[in-house]
Image (cartoon, rainbow, N blue to C red; front, side, top):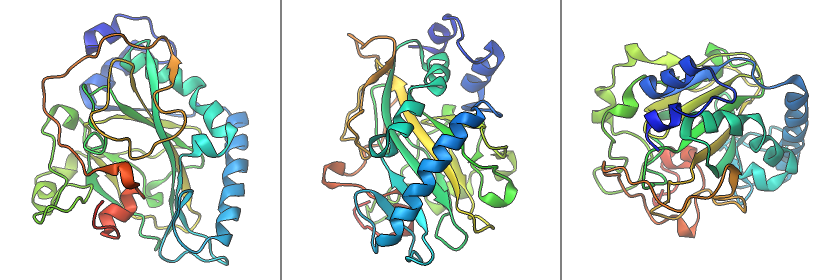
Amino acid sequence: MTPEEVLSHPARVLSQAQREAYFADGYIMVEKLISDQWLDRLRGVTAEFVEKSRAETQSGDVFDLAPGHSADKPMVRRLKEPDDRHEAYWDFATDIIADVVADLVGPNVIFHHSKLNFKWHDGGDAVRWHQDIQFYPHTNYSPLTVGTYLQDAGGGDGPVAIIPGSQDGPLYDQYDADGNWTGSLSDTAAAKIDESKAVWLTGPAGSITVHNCRTVHGSPPSDVTDGRPLLLNAYASADAFAYTHNPSYSSHYRQVVRGEPARWAHHDPRPCLIPPDWSGGYTSIFAAQAGEEAAE
C-alpha cells in the first residue's frame, strides 16, 4: 500500500500526526506504551534465558554470545527467534504492537521475525550505521521493526540512533571492497552521513521505537554493565513478498497477525541490494559487523 492508502484507514493506536511523522521521518518513538504487566512478564522470561545461557560456551541456534561470555559472567548478544522460544514473546508480538504496525503499513499485517538484543559493556555490542532491507529484500519497502525497551534506555545504554528522512535517500551497498558481507555502510558511505542530524531514541521502560526498513540507524557501545535488553519484532504489509531466504526464520514467518493475506503483491520500482544466501544459517548483525563470519 502507498502511504496515502495507509493513512486513509482509521488509526488503532497511533495519532494521525504520529503516522504522518513516521512517513516523513522514517521512524517514531512512543513512550511508555507497554504496560507494567507485560514488562514484568517479558523481563521474567528474559532473565530465565540469560540464566540458561550460562551452560553455553559458543553461539548456536538459540544464543549469539559475546566473546567474553562465561558461566560466571553471561553475556548474550542475542536471543534468536524469541517468538519460537517462549509463548510470552509470541503473545506480545501479536498484541498491541501489531496494532501499531497496522497503523503504519495498512490493515493487513504479516510477521517477519523477532530477536532480543542485549547491550553489555565490552561485549562487542556497537552496531554500525546500516539499513535493514538489504538483509531481507522484499517487493516493497513496507517492512519495519518495532523495538521495545524492557528497561530504561539512557544515553549511556547504547540507545538506537536514527537519521531522520534517510528512508527516502539511497540504499547503500553493505558489502566490502572484497565482496564480503558486512551488514553495514562502508567507511566512505558512513563518512557522508550527517551525524549532527542523528536522533538518539532514549526512553523509559515500556517505550517503543519503530523504524522503516530503509532508515539508516545504528547504536554506540554501552557504557553500563546491566545488559540492557531490546526486544525487536519485524513485520510487513501482507502485500510485501520476499525475494530471498529469511535470515531469521521462525515458525511464525509470514503469519497474518492483523487483517487478511494478500492476493496481489505490491511492487516498489526502486531496486534493492541482494544479500548472501542465508539458507545455510545466520548468526547476528554483531557477528557480521565484527567480521566473525566471512559469509555474513
